[in-house]
Image (spheres, rainbow, N blue to C red):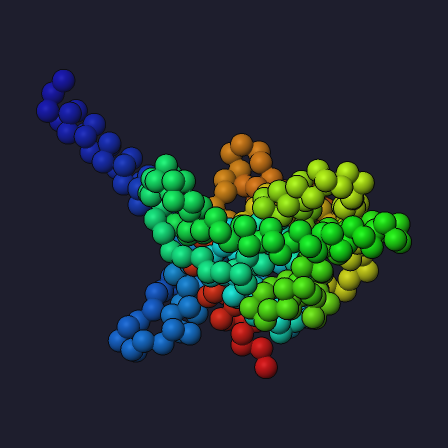
Length: 338
């Protein structure tokens, strides 16, 4: 091949490459990507506002704040769901504040989300280490929840608190024939603990229902097991709560869901909203993925396909740790209410 042909071929390759790489595009309109300017000093409110234009999960967080503020403005009936580890953490104090000031309407949580609220009234939890030796902790009688330590004495104290209450409820059941629901048990725990640090206490005081579809899990379930072993005819009815929770969505003018974590709390709230043909607002915060087709990792679009979220609903999933994200959301929404 002569030099001229070789040069022509090389030039043609360059032209093709330039055409593909430097292709003309349409101009874009919308939010300009921009972060916080520290030339303006430190302003935490403005830093959080800047998340909306930062991109990635920061912008999803910004959207979550917008959606929750719209829930509040539109006076939506708000369902809050959280898993037990959230109560093990310091988020328990934020949940307590939300219930104390009637910022939300219904809670759905796991057994751990109930028992650990009560247990914290009996004694403190302490910061530990994710990489601590399980064998060494077991030898010392220390239970680990991520990087949070709980002395097993707390569970002994919890049993001493719960067993007399179960006996009282059992005696009432024998006298009246009425079987209590899981939410009734939570109600009584909040009433009996009589401690203003407790979520359950404020829920009882403010008549905000806490539903626990997995009441027999965790230490609370252990106590029910021990009590029922001695009193086989003692019963707790979970079907009443299913009816109440599902019925609570029907006829709502606006329904909003805030889901921290996943699993049964996520599905219970979304499934209840299916009975009204879907929620108007949805904010998910978790780290789950959907590659295994689990409900835990499912995005809001999947819930729309089931009628759990309305097709026109405002929704977002923030991929991240709720212990970091949720305090920022509350600071820029519920805590700003006049």
